[in-house]
View 1 (cartoon, one colour):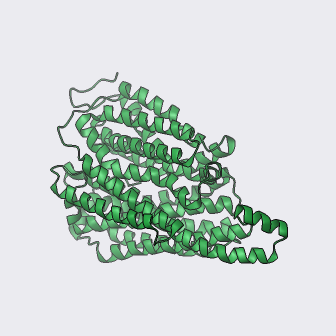
View 2: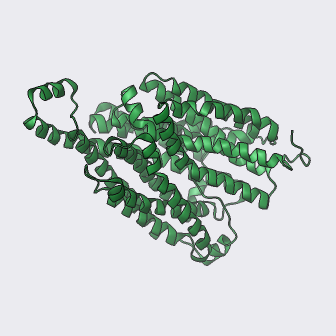
View 3: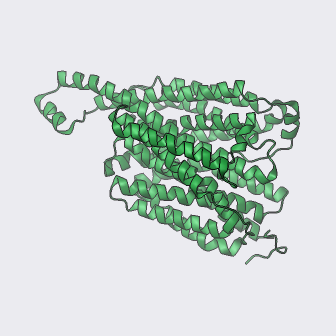
Length: 510
């Protein structure tokens, strides 16, 4: 057991390195799981019988519960003790991963993914808070934050590559099974290297967490249902109606709660409100781009899972490069130019991707726009984090950064559901045309197979998928253009803010 300097919970000596390793490992596991499943999506779709529209729930079930309960998870650590809550979250994440790996149908997998999100929402904010209770303020804590942010940024790329390796060498279930031994090792090591934090009396805003999460689930389900059954479908309309009621009740609850899960006064500041809106819209595009490009490179270009994982590595390299340059130039120019430029670059990349067709190649049609988009991401990540925490009292910095991460997760889920709706509508329209083209030239045997399976063979099916993906990229480009307008007309950076930024070394959001 490491020693301490008294009762403040700060660990000295070599225990610091081990503590940071445990904390960073947890964050890597949680962040990695957002992307590691993406590579496995085509195999999950085939094995468990998902449609392309319902397949998005494999992603959304995780991100919705993760984003919806993120602030409540951080609050639980403050009230109950961060180490205790951290261990519980890690073990819950591991259990959910085990259940997901054994899933025999789509419902079981989505339930396990939702439970994973709950575990991640408990473990992730507590992991970040443990840095403040384990490391003294100063260079040591700054380095720890840097490692935490670096692991978070690298987690996406590691997840894509690791997912490709596991799917190709084993099978898709191992993208979930791999979390189990990691979670157990973290849970066993934590009591030995991390001291328990002091408890702070407080109130759980469980009602706020429940209303916001269920309300967002209803909203996302409404969009996905509309893509499958149409906008006049009774269940679609009922889902939207329930979402309006639940989210309205959520706002009323937060206004009256003495300790709300979402401090609404955070939105009173013009810059901070604009920053949250930019993150919301930008995340809509980010999640959609990765989801649809993963399907495209494997189903149309024929990439193996490992090749697909390697195909996305340049994205992480470009994000790291532009994020590093942005952090150096921010004190001189302020965040607004990078917010605007980042949005324009991302929108340009997505506009380029709208030209994708069945004849597209990775080097000629995919890599270039991906690099443009990721350059915009790098600029946005740094700028948004600094703006979200600018002029925030220390006692509210956790809530401010937590809200930014919540906007990212919720925006990603909502955006993906909207893009899936666009995809579904465009795909159905294209399917009618392609079916007519196929039947006009098909042999009697091919026609009989089509009547029985209702599935078109290649290249007709590729054209349907590509048409839907291209339409989804149009909608994603609109989201990023919206972020450019918000950055241009809402964000206002004063000279006094620039002076303050010169000393700010806040880690970037992920």
